[in-house]
Amino acid sequence: MGGEVPEPRRLSRALNSGCGGVPEEALNLVLGYVDDPRDREAASLVCRRWHRIDALTRKHVTVGFCYAAEPARLLARFPRLESLAIKGKPRAAMYGLIPEDFGAYAAPWLAELAAPLECLKAVHLRRMTVTDGDIAVLVRARGHMLQVLKLDKCSGFSTDALRLVARSCRSLRTLFLEECDIINNGSEWLHELAVSNSVLVSLNFYMTELKVEPADLELLAKNCKSLISLKISECDLSDLIGFFQTSKALEEFAGGAFYEVGEYTKYEKVKFPPRLCLLGLTYMGTNEMSVIFPFSSTLKRLDLQYTLLTTEDHCQIIAKCPNLLVLEVRNVIGDRGLVVVADTCKKLRRLRIERGDDDPGQEEQGGVSQLGLTAVAVGCRELEYIAAYVSDITNGALESIGTFCKNLYDFRVVLLDREREIADLPLDNGVRALLRNCTKLRRFALYLRPGGLSDVGLGYIGQYSGNIQYMLLGNVGESDHGLIHFAMGCTKLRKLELRSCCFSERALALAVLQMPSLRYIWVQGYRASQTGRDLLLMARPFWNIEFAPPSPQSSYQLTVDGLPCVDSQAQVLAYYSLAGRRSDCPQWLIPLHPA
Image (tube, rainbow, N blue to C red):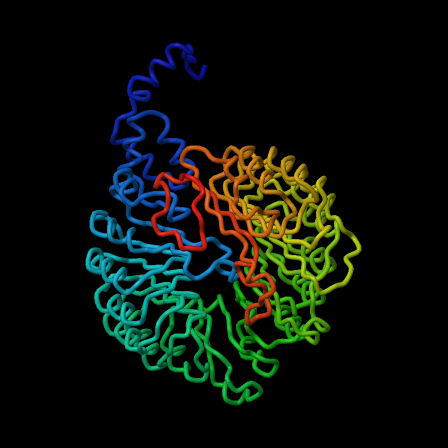
């Protein structure tokens, strides 16, 4: 029954002779349904035939770090790509920890790939330096078929390039510019987009300095009946009444602003489109929040990070939003607000609690601690993502998250230094319970205060993080021994970031050698030498090591925000690369290997 089981020798011979005799047409069809890059990678290793078919049928590739590969090799390996994503500067650049002149230039990638990749329809560049010339190269080669252009936290280009995109890329469905540093040469690009495009589905220039003409948005809505997502820079909400009346299909809106806080009569005529379920408003105060009450029960995503709401205001709004899947707030929400979240939002999947103003008044009315986190863990058991800045935390709160939030795949906590004393440190047992129970975790970040995690706790992270692929740790551990013990357990970790740690240069190098899957490590603040000589202990083929020595001149200098200068502490960046040594290293970054 069920057929004869082949002998091992016969099975091996069948696999070796054409991989089981699967017809090539069938194999093409099957691999066409495989999108996960890890599954694709595994399939390509079966035999040369599968490797070739994977190369010809792969539609999307993400380059995790722009200096880890060469455009020419990518083109040779995947000549029929339809979608390409490239990541540039380290994540630390988003927090001002990487100097502006780091590099991560888009020019070589677009110059070498835009024309030869004849099937390319989608480009996503993240934290890269992109010039008007780079965009012009892309538009000339692929403008006639480009459907998706995402420039995420990029810099170096102007609205002149956006005007070229708007005029030339008439098939564009997604234009994403969120948090880009764009040179503003006028708002004509938006008018050009409204006139030239009739198929746009998503437009995002949220958190930019770009100016908005409400008439252009209204024209865009009239011409693009398929527009379902719009996230814009600041524009008075009362000027968007015509746009909202025209945008019948709109499901997501963010941006706008309540410029005249307290003058609700000015905004009482604002009526949002009937399908709207994803919302983020700017400068909304207590008197204006009633504008969202009529449809609050249908909201699935709510972003209150840039509002002027109090803790009580958060409680009132969230109590009317039982169907939220995503909630983004500042820590002014407080424990009281999180209790309301726990009681109301039973379907919640993602919770983000950003740091609020460093203002004593804000902290008095808000502030998130173990009380709020525990309430959310117990009440919102479908959570998959938690990122929170907290004023206090306990082992018990982490244990509760591990007990009730079994679906977590991404967990990030930053412990602020506002409280003089944290009673329940170190958090060793809580971290162990969380990691042991949340087996779906793939991304994990824990930024504490000195004493927040002992060597024992650091060892627990290594022991119970078998499936985690990305990790950020700050102020953890007590000695080099703890780091080595941690590293020995991280068999699947691919990307590691460390900040403000007590480890020696030698221990860092030896730890890297203990992590077989590690592809990338960035470290800031450790017991560094002036030359980085001990880092060479981790030297091996295809492993680039770059060192930024501490700057004695900057040790006592502060930025305009009152923070230490970015070059006051040593930094290490090491990564696997098939491209060899960088040719565009800035002067402050020293390539140690390859020499």
